[in-house]
Image 1 (cartoon, rainbow, N blue to C red):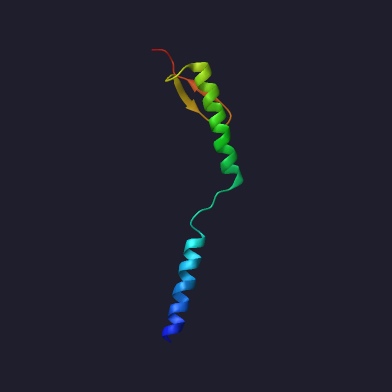
Image 2 (cartoon, rainbow, N blue to C red):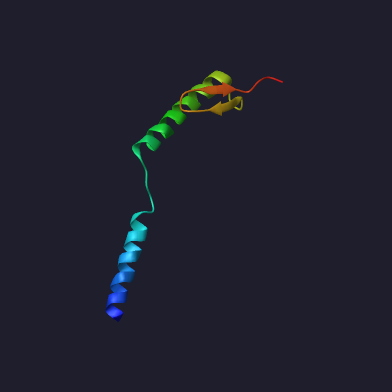
Amino acid sequence: MNKTMQICSILAMVCALSACVSVSESNVESGKRIAEMSQQAIATCGQGNVDKVTTTSYTCKANK
């Protein structure tokens, strides 16, 4: 009985650890696209003047 419990515990730990990290390809692509848009936004708006960046666009802060 004790050996069965040890094996079950080890299997449970392996199953729990195998599901810790899940990275999909779309998340990686989104990250790359955000980085590209951020660089373009800084070049256009100027350092510190970027309001919002998404995967498809960016906005500059309004001069107040």
